[in-house]
Length: 186
Image (cartoon, rainbow, N blue to C red; front, side, top):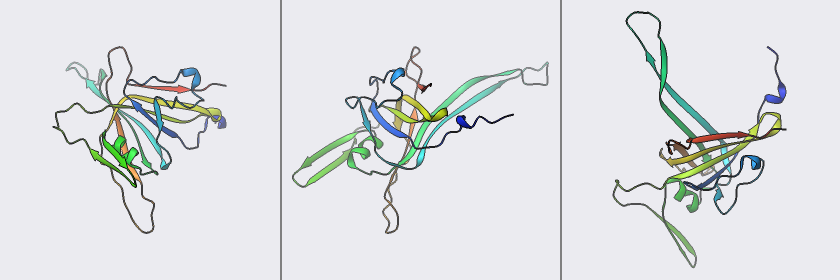
């Protein structure tokens, strides 16, 4: 098998966050910046940004044959995770799925949502903009997600303070796919 070197990909990605249901950029705008009115750039990251799709297939078996007859998709988890290099209170609000921000002369503050655990969470949408083959652009959109993993921030004398985050995607509707990938073409 020959190698097509222009299919090799390397480079950073940019993360944007928007409200669940935010207007997505047109597919034809894959090489552009999402509208600032709907999408917020989360700033610098460290150690890359990872997109993962974990699929679980359940085997179909019958007594009459020894081979597995087939399989059906029974679960799909899709995530984006990274370390945000800009540990701002604004980013903390996104990582904790909302809260209350306040500011005044010489201060800013943030308090997380602390209502009943049965309260409907604040879903968001995430765009990961990176590279595709031929050094063109690739956009991965999770249309409904929550930050639902441990959020950490370490302060140490010889290391940068980061926010770790993992957004997990969820079902949207029968007529809207939960995620989408768009590649720019030459």
